[in-house]
Amino acid sequence: MGLTKEYDVIVVGAGHAGIEAALAAARKGMRTACFTTTLENIGAMNCNPSIGGPAKGHLVREIDALGGQMALTADATFLQMRLLNSGKGPAVQALRAQIDKRAYAWAMRLVLERTPNLDLKQAMVQEIVVEDGRVRGIVTATGIFYGAKAVVLSTGTYLHGRTIIGEVQRSSGPGGLAPAVGLTESLKRLGFEVGRFKTGTPPRVDGRTVDFSRMVRQDGDPEPHRFSFMSPLDHREQLPCWLTHTTPASHELIRRNLHRAPMFTGVIEGRGPRYCPSVEDKVVRFADKESHQVFLEPESRESHEMYVLGLSTSLPEEVQIELVRTVPGMEEAELMRPGYAIEYDYIVSTQLKPSLETKLVRGLFCGGQINGTSGYEEAAAQGLIAGINAACYVEGREPLVISRSEGYIGVLIDDLVTKGSPEPYRMLTSRAEFRMMLRQDNAHLRLTEKGREYGLVDDARWEVFVALRDGIEAERERLARTVVGPAPEVQRVLERLGSAPLKAGVTLEQLLRRPEVRYEHLVEMGLGRPDLDEAIWREVETQVKYAGYIAKEQQQVDRMRRMEARRIPPTLDYQALTGLSMEAREKLSRIRPETLGQASRISGVSPADVAVLMVHLDRLARARDRAEEA
Ligand SMILES: Cc1cc2nc3c(=O)[nH]c(=O)nc-3n(C[C@H](O)[C@H](O)[C@H](O)COP(=O)(O)OP(=O)(O)OC[C@H]3O[C@@H](n4cnc5c(N)ncnc54)[C@H](O)[C@@H]3O)c2cc1C
Image 1: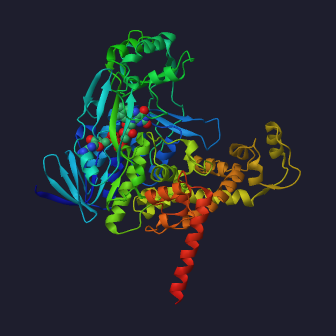
Image 2: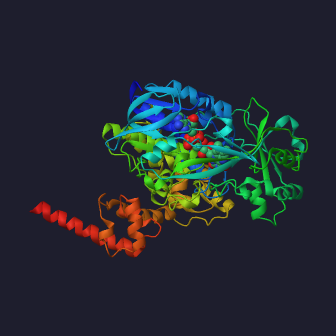
Image 3: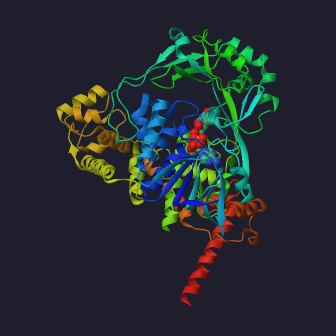
């Protein structure tokens, strides 16, 4: 076993998490290596050809604000974009893009290859080398040792991957690629608790064999969108998706074949994602429903392959062939790939710190599906934080921890490390408590400064951001300062909008706070600034209109911050705190929260337990003060 090279940071995996981790570390100046079982799967989208949507779109914007890559590559390779919930409030609006999978993966590979300080390597990593509780490097399946000060694991669904189609089971990673063997055993030897999850994907059909005239066409929005304000607004030709549905014949076929469905025969042991159920699961769980929606989504501009959203299944292939043909428009459809289920190993995420470093091994970080999550965006968000913090660890710098009030990334990671997840964790807007503050439209305002502080926001991005931030502030000031009286052009527009006429002078801010008055109406009244960048006036409008809700959330955030500021000593002996319930003692000892806030979110830790902890922390603080005075 010879040493070939010494790195600062080694990233195992070049999926969505590994890409962000490797880029973050390399862009922060770390000598970085990124390992993948094959160079052909870099940035592979193994399931749906889309990025974004509710909560996930928020994550993409936050990744972008911190200087990550996903948004930029999605903007460069989208096939269609839509702003979901555009008629609803800003907290639930979300951008969703259909992505050209092939173009996306290739673009990501080129970004990695062109990044200084970054070596790409095809090799199966089988062992994590640890010395004195600190990571020292990795060993590949061919016996080569690479040294590193920090290692990020982003192995996705590859660890002991097993795919299942009906009665056929194979030891395999996604898409028929080789599974990763050996690494799980290495993790277990180091003392990690490893679990087993499952996920699944639908069949793909040949678009040339589909009768789209029997489906409902779904186009992208006519006006261009983008995830990143650093991308140009692109008017490229968009490809449509198609809506159809299952039929009673589909459901009857599934019921007849349940005895061959691995989901129901006990062949699949791992827990699957509740929010992406297989079609056989839907038919059983919602037995009285006569039909479920099915969307056909293009996988690439260059290919006829279509993803059949809604028909995720691990039924035998011959049943799948019959199944798609029970769906209107697919009577003649030819399968290009069958759907399948995949089981894989993950590590129990409560073994991680909020920095995503493991509690057991210093310098070892985990990000992505290995932490029990599901989804590209969830993976990328964690990969970015793991990569930044691996670099911080090497630099001897405090890690970057995003709080729950700063971003969905904070919610995601806090949930994982504090509560863990009994099933693949997917980001949902309902998981965030401060939804008015954590909007997708203000992600850059929330996080760009952090990205800059941690060295990932370059000068070009910073300049654009500063212009936006200052523009918003200046316009808000102008609206708060400028008083308008009952001038005829103002009254005319107000009357048309059904809004009460002005009797005396009001500020523009007060005027804009009226539900029926939009910023463009101010422009019409001659009171807005027609030359203002759309990103600025839209943000100003949201801030003004929702100021009341935002202020209320801010009060809750302040309360939470006070709890987060109370740090708990890492060596605290919870068993000695007899005032705590048994359950709290057990969970606090196992999870070892870093702050009182984190402790309060552990299930089984009651408000009474938090009060006991608070009293104890006060006592410790007083003792410390006395010791300092003496
Ligand atoms: C069949 C299937 C269905 C899915 N369904 C859904 C769904 O319904 N909804 C949803 O949101 N998401 C779904 N996903 C999940 C989505 O694809 C993942 O969440 C996402 O790709 C995870 O990203 P990642 O970077 O963590 O891992 P991956 O994208 O899986 O990348 C893992 C990387 O690690 C490398 N690797 C692994 N082990 C080693 C090793 N020992 N040595 C070297 N390299 C290694 C691999 O080669 C690869 O580069 C599905 C995935 C699959 C496979």
